[in-house]
Amino acid sequence: MRKFMVVFILMAAFYAATILQAADDKPYVIVVSFDGFRWDYTDRGLTPNLDRLMDRGVKAQSFEPVFPSKTFPNHYSIVTGLYTPNHGLISNHFRNPYTGEEYRLGDTVSVRQAKWYRGETIWVTAQRQGVKTASFFWPGSETEPGYTHPTYFKYYDGSIPHKERVDGVIEWLSLPEEQRPQLIFLYFSDTDTQGHRHGPDSPQLNAAIKLVDRQLGYLQQRLQEIGMAEQVNTIVLSDHGMSSVTPERLIRIDRFVDLSRVTIDDGGPFMRLSVKDPYKKDDVLEALQKQAEHFRVYRKTDIPNHWHYRNSPFIGDLLLVADVGWSLVKDAAEAKRLQKPGTRGNHGYDNHALDMHGIFVAAGPAFKEGYRTGTLHNIDVYPLLVDILGLTPNPMIDGKAERIRFILK
Ligand code: AMP
Ligand code: ZN
Ligand code: ZN
Image (tube, rainbow, N blue to C red; front, top):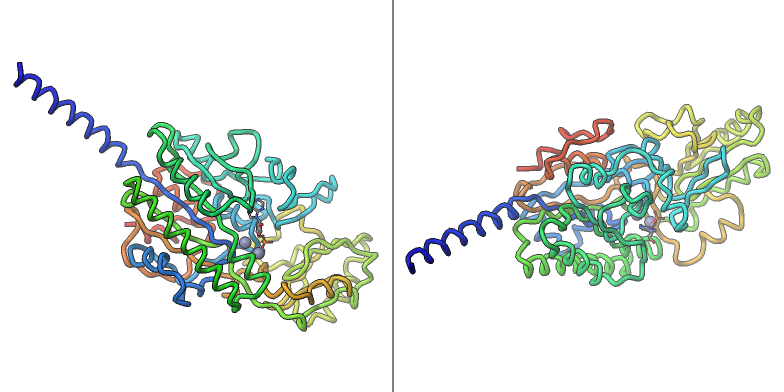
């Protein structure tokens, strides 16, 4: 009888081990975004935790954003694999000129309306195939109806302490296996905020670099504590870089154009103009072209191909793009605002400019070890995640798996 019991216990233990083994075989990915973390911030000797991650895994020389190099367009390109006109978010703020409705980063009504978002996010792709997902803040993750947002998500609140965000991620990973998300997004804004306020070369920015790096350290520590450190793939990336801007480098548009003849959207690194009288489009374009110093102006149809920006009905008639470090402003009042202290860095410029590039560092069972590569493209992250999680992708994407797949084992 005792012998029988021993055999039974051994069999039960073997069975339990097989189940645990099955759970262990699942791929897990955490994508951490450090907003506005420029490609070269890792060279400042302030990031011991990022350094450890890159030693264990992959580091790209830089991470190319899409145009415009702003927060919402880029976070949404990362999760859809699409250029901005194809996923809908052509800026942090834009208008539908046909209805007059506005989309705005800080507006909790519009950011939750699915109608502004096109393409398929990686969380929708995953959930359709039975894989649970989660987000502790990500632009475009708060939409209704329910099937369009991650399985678990939080409404954005920048005042939620960093520790709470990491603990939230660990809580999700500690759920029973059938409820546990395999793909989790996590976001920190500090490097962007301090970069804007004090510039990319300021001590305040360096403090923010250290702060976000410490969050990565805390995440790794908590993953160790729950026994998942070896199993989880961690990707740390950023949406864009940062350039210093100075009060002397301002371009005032009212010097060239009668402001009553145009509607202006955006400003700073780039500006979109709609000319009220369609017959005057060429006049406005010529006036701007004649004056164009430290910026370029394009008719919508002539926007360079490499920006992949032309194909949106919301862009307006003309696109103005400033040289890196210069700022386009409407008039004297706006110029004054930009001359105030606390406005020393910006992004949104040509996405090919190196100052606009971010970081990409990743480690875990899926990634090569101690591997260094050149520039990666953020629209290729969607197909990368598809590969790691073993999903069938939305085939209608701009990203290319073959441009990034080689970083995997
Ligand atoms: P920007 O530098 O203008 O491109 O945008 C950066 C800002 O976007 C950050 O400082 C955050 O305050 C804000 N932000 C980031 N994620 C979200 C989100 N999910 N919802 C609302 N605002 C966000
Ligand atoms: Zn950003
Ligand atoms: Zn920013």
